[in-house]
Image 1 (cartoon, rainbow, N blue to C red):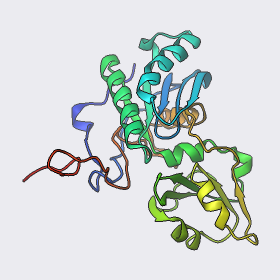
Image 2 (image 1 turned 120 degrees about the horizontal axis):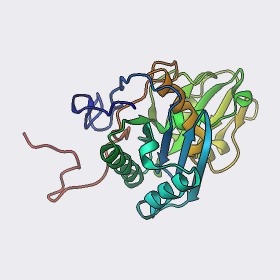
Image 3 (image 1 turned 180 degrees about the vertical axis):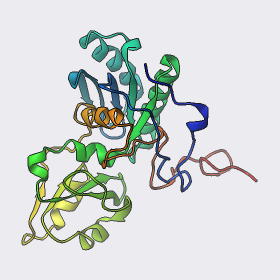
Image 4 (image 1 turned 30 degrees about the vertical axis):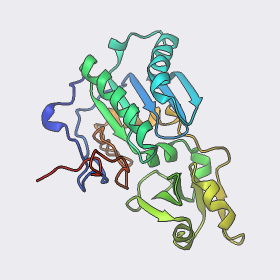
Length: 267
C-alpha cells in the first residue's frame, strides 16, 4: 500500500503564487497502480479507473455547469463498473487546470477529500499534459504539439510539447493574434478546445494538423500516463506529477467582500 501525501509535502499555491505552477511531487514508485482519475476543468466531467495496466471503467458527461452534482455519483458508478471498493485504490489523479475556476476547484476538492478519507496520495496533472496524452502516438509522430485551451475570454492558454510529450516551453496565456503570430515553425499538431479559436486564422501553406472534435479532456485518455508516472515515482520525461493545487495562469476573478481578489492576504 502506498504512503499518503504528508503535510510536509502539501502546499496551497504554486511556486510563482496563486497563478503559478504547483510544486512537483516526490513519491515512492507504485508498481502497477490501481488509479482513479478525475477531470472537471472544462465543458465535461469525466472519471476513469485504471487497473492492472488497462482501463477498467470510465464515464464522460458533457456539461458547462453542474459538475459538483455529477462528479461523485460518477465516481461511484465507475467504481461499481470496475467491481472495486474505494479501498482498493492506490492513488487518485486530478487535472489541476488551467480551465474553469469553478470546475477545477470542484475536481480538486473531490480528489483531496477522497485522498484524505482513504489515506491515499493525490497527484495533479496539468490540463495541457492531459490533452497531449490523449493524442494517438501515430498522430504525434514528427510533429510538435501545441495544446490550446479556451480561456472563455478573448485569449487562450497554450503549451508546447514534443512528440514524446515533453514540455518544450512554459505554459502561456496569449491573445489569438499573439498565438497565431508565435506559432513554431515546422509540422505542427494543434489540440484542445481552443483550436476552434485559432483555426480560422491558420495559414493554408503551413503543415498544421488540427484534432477534430470538441477537445474535451477525458480521464480515460490520461489515466494510463499517470499510472506510468506513478510506477516510476514521477521521474519520467513527461513528468513530474504535481501537487493537487489549482493552476490558473491568470489569477481568478472571484472577489471577496470589499472588492479584494480571492487569495489576497492582508499584511
